[in-house]
Image (cartoon, rainbow, N blue to C red; front, top):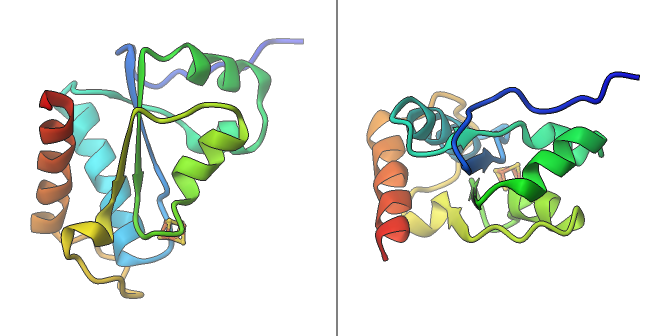
Length: 125
Ligand code: SF4
């Protein structure tokens, strides 16, 4: 059987987002897209880790550095990684940046930029 691996991004640095059904979940997702577009980190399929897809869990474990962006303190992305024994080196929670959670699914551009900047600050620290 073909071993399934994540085909996203070739960077050794990977980013996952909770991609939750709220503004902050979608901000997390959009921030991960922007980090990938800027080639800061490869956007990694978190669902593959949650689904215990063997090759994808292996790829995630082999990442040089894993960034988890979560919308809110429930931290579904970080916990999904931790269930697979992967500890993210950087954990960002969008609501910790003063962005309030709401059911609006449209990601606010300024909030996305704030999250991207926060990731870059953490990487530089
Ligand atoms: S971390 Fe919060 S916003 Fe993201 S999926 Fe979980 S509950 Fe939803």
